[in-house]
Image (cartoon, rainbow, N blue to C red; front, side, top):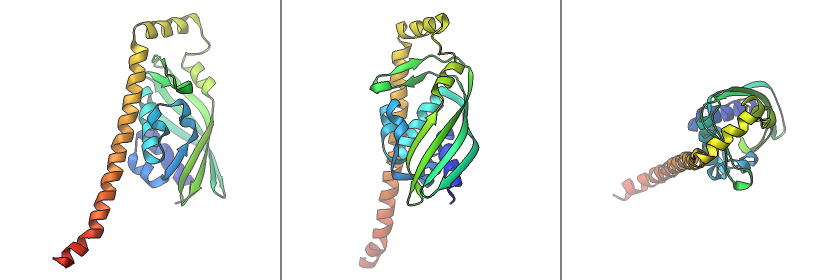
Length: 205
């Protein structure tokens, strides 16, 4: 599989929650350096962490997609220049320094450029880092600059308790996504072990 095809599968896994794509492209020891400001489960290595990130983003953005502008690859690196698009129809919860900050849905659409860098190992993505226009994204969504309307929206969101509930929901759904794929991986390993043992058991019988 070409580096460009791997990158497309990576974006498909994130945008659509496609675990099959993730298993094809994500190394078991994959590290996402951008997960520092995401829910805790997103920081897990491998496919579980990526599926947690996908669940977190898709809970906030409807129609999430990454439209590739250009891609280049050299040695063990692939760089993808993309448009990230979607509409914020759910709470967007970030975790700077591990503390949740929840932004109420504005139902506004966003289109921002991003550059994603993937490092390959054993023909799979083992590391990810990106340069994103987060300021532009938050401006398009109406959260910045801190206008009176944006401040009032944040105050209502916080005082009503919805911000706290949104943070708890983001943590829970991302943890569930990671746990489900971890269980699938474990079940697959068990089946492979049983398949390897079956001929010996049959012979001894």
